[in-house]
Length: 279
Ligand SMILES: CC(C)(COP(=O)(O)OP(=O)(O)OC[C@H]1O[C@@H](n2cnc3c(N)ncnc32)[C@H](O)[C@@H]1OP(=O)(O)O)[C@@H](O)C(=O)NCCC(=O)NCCS
Image (spheres, helix red, strand yellow):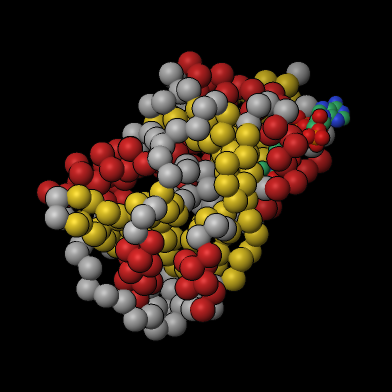
């Protein structure tokens, strides 16, 4: 019988192996991090004792996010994914979440639509194997006294409160953190999580009315990442930003549709994702 259980530490190797059949480049640390952010929000689908699939979710107050959703290829099309997704939706609703976001592969839009998810915007998943030299500007680094303004700004535009997640990125010395103020007004900020050989650019949030600031933030971040493998998830409608990435040699690996179940939250802005599994 199909059953959903908590994904425990001893299942992390299974979860990594399954996720990486999709080339998601996951490591046990990624599931540990999900567990830290949402202690009961990672799930394992079993049929009696056979492990069939996984999914994770996270609540940010009124907004929640669903991801890392995969069923072993041999067991698909038998209702397992439906059981897991319904379980996660109920979990998030019980936590007080009103709106659930996902990044969906286009071929799965009909599947998610059946649960009531609606498309909001398409995003390109961009990648470069080895970034060359990029000319950046000297923008202000986010310092500790800016943190509360960044968190308020992020909550206003993203639509959920993700302090735990952002604190983790903001307090790691090796990460990149820049912001642009106009007087007292925050116009935009950009973060990048930096590892030894690779880096993830995002989240970035910038006011719609100031695309040139988003442009400068991205150039400045990329100028510090020469030689690394770099990933970013960029809105398809932000043509000038995509052109910037393409001019530096980035390529689209695939694209995803951001979908929401529930009323749309947050405010229009220029947005680069923190990750596919957490928004
Ligand atoms: C997405 C995914 C998790 C769905 O899992 P699944 O177990 O196949 O999901 P379900 O079986 O509940 O539903 C899949 C389809 O099978 C159909 N189905 C459900 N039970 C069925 C049954 N008993 N017999 C035949 N079909 C069935 C569903 O109606 C659904 O139809 P659709 O493809 O037209 O939407 C799975 O396809 C997967 O792991 N994909 C690779 C990873 C991935 O793409 N993850 C999502 C990232 S956005």
